[in-house]
Image (cartoon, rainbow, N blue to C red; front, side):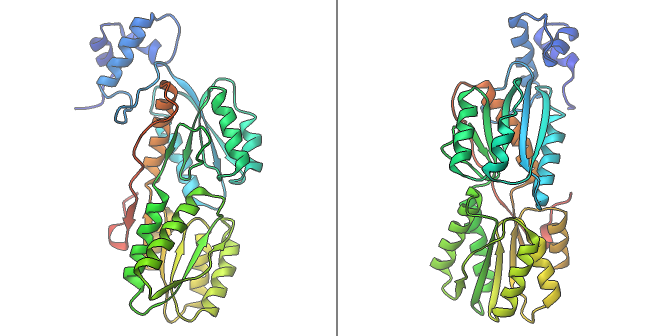
Length: 341
């Protein structure tokens, strides 16, 4: 059966197609009872997105998204996913993507000051910083719903977090690293963007806990913070390869991944370390296929984009301060099961 049409909705709701069109496009001139019938019929027929028991708004709403456009392929694909999905949802009156130049409060706070008055919901990627938490809390208290994406900002008043449980993702990476690299033993390097990023904290903690508990033959080196910059990562990876002859593995928690690959291709160590990264992008797809890296822990950027829009709509529709929904399950991607784009 194909997707429901406006005619199907009109027949089920017992109204005209013109009334359905006015409701779905938030035009005036429709009685509240008829508006409710149309929206209920649209939900029942699968015309509108649903997520478990999420209630959706009765009329289209305006959404804004604040995404740091740093050296990170995931962010670009996230923006594309949000924009594509929002364009298919009648309840999204507008979808404004706002590019930030960083994850910290110095980028987020000025942007939050310019939120349009008509905006009902905001999706954002941000570092967990006291100033950011306070700014988000003020926005929420003003009646705008906020959803955090990929990395949470706890205790900020946000309605939901969309993404994987990052501690679980880190533990998964450690188990794979241990099984693949512990045979000969050695050191493991860890690259992260910043500990100010809640998601990176979780991944580091999960990785460290499992590696230290279950794989004593592997020693975790001090984490290297790169600020998500590939040039810094390349310098640090080059030093690691030249100064650590027993380097058994490398875990890259965030962005800056190009620097790791560039250093590997330049030095070409006799014993290439096992390399584990996060998120399938065009580059990590190619690196897996070519055998340059070994594992990608993926959070399915398309699903993250879709769920961000759905959960924002659900947050706007409910009076509850928080949505109690499951996190996205991380996927283990190897060379032999790379998803088709």
